[in-house]
Image (tube, rainbow, N blue to C red; front, side, top):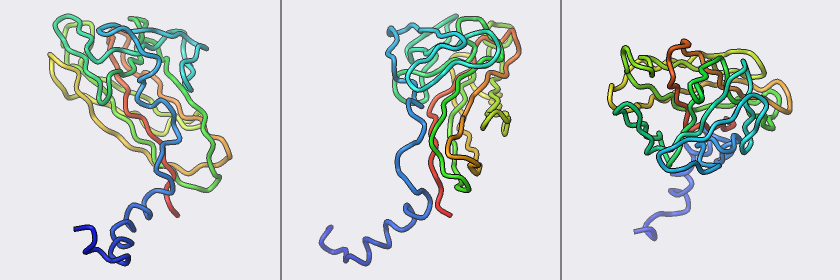
Amino acid sequence: MRRLFSKMSLALLTLPVAATAVQAGSLIKGGGFESPVVPPGGFSSWTNGETFGKWTVVGAPGGVSIVSGVFTSNGIAFPAKAGAQWLDLTGANLNQATGVQQTVKTVPGTSYRLKFSVGNVVNAGGPFGVSSAIDVQVDGVTLMTASHTGGSPVELSWKGFSLTFTATSSKTTIAFINADPSADNSNGLDGVSLTALAP
């Protein structure tokens, strides 16, 4: 069947992809939080100033945790959005305005699309709350509060978000900060990617 396509038709088929993104790979590294690998069914935590991969823990004194996608607690399953792991911005029951950031190379005047997913479990009266909110910052300025209020009482559910911004310098810092109330001990982040858009 491939031989039936002319070079012209192949060029037309690939044109929409070329028009939407300048590069295929994500500028954010480790956006699936697959490394370092944590114990199956468990989690590992980092506090302010500590790093894992290309991420640095920032914000109020607290911590974040990479969680195994087969982790369960109080009869609730906490699967990853994709892959085997995800990031909990509330950490090990610390739940402060803590988060992670990563600095990437950018081109001033170029537009970029940031994509990510927020995980929420509806645990009314329980330790995990009923909503998940993340402040998304670009170079220290909050451009979006991504809030996920839906989901299930028995399993972490995921909702995708995207944000487009224009870079103003050769380096841009992207941060995700926990914005849940203090009694809410679950706020998932997974599937983070950043791509440059064509003019």
